[in-house]
Length: 261
Ligand SMILES: [Zn+2]
Image (cartoon, rainbow, N blue to C red; front, side):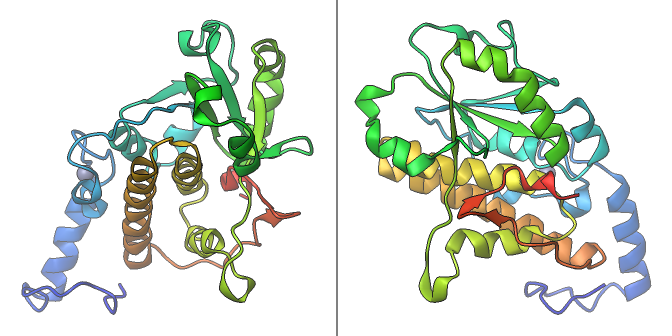
């Protein structure tokens, strides 16, 4: 195990390494059921907000039924613990009975999913100020790229019927042409596969959408802190793998990037 980036720990040299390993193996088998839902050895509860943050945007995450079963390091439980108005739905498609939020006549539904016709989220937000977008519902698909595509296609007729608009995140241009968002994505290209991209996408989208800037900033910082904690654990506990290809295409992020598996 690589301990080079381990935080300062007064007991770092004790107990002896073998016992330390034993303890870690034991912890690795236990799950933090009442908290983040992750193995206790990689518990991120201390990085989560003391109570879920209330946002004016409601977030609906449709997660593929296989996704949470397949990935015990899924971030959706952490996302649920971080945001008061996050609604997690399990299924392969959205339909009229999925959520009353979507069928309310005053709802403004947005599907965060890249496609040739999707509008950059920041552009949409600038054209639709908060007063013009009541009851904003942000729909996010959580699964592998293939699963998310199937979910988007299968949900298409219903989403069209409620006037959902497809939006995507743009890459922020930063110093030296490398975007800040891209730098977060670099962290994600490792074994977490896609779940991390969902938390990151929600973080970035709410930063743009929340009418109160301080709420948007708080949400983004909180969720990215959780993401960084997960990546830190990943570096310590999981075997490194080759970075996956860049996840951008024509200046838009491919979401969810669990897409590339
Ligand atoms: Zn925990």
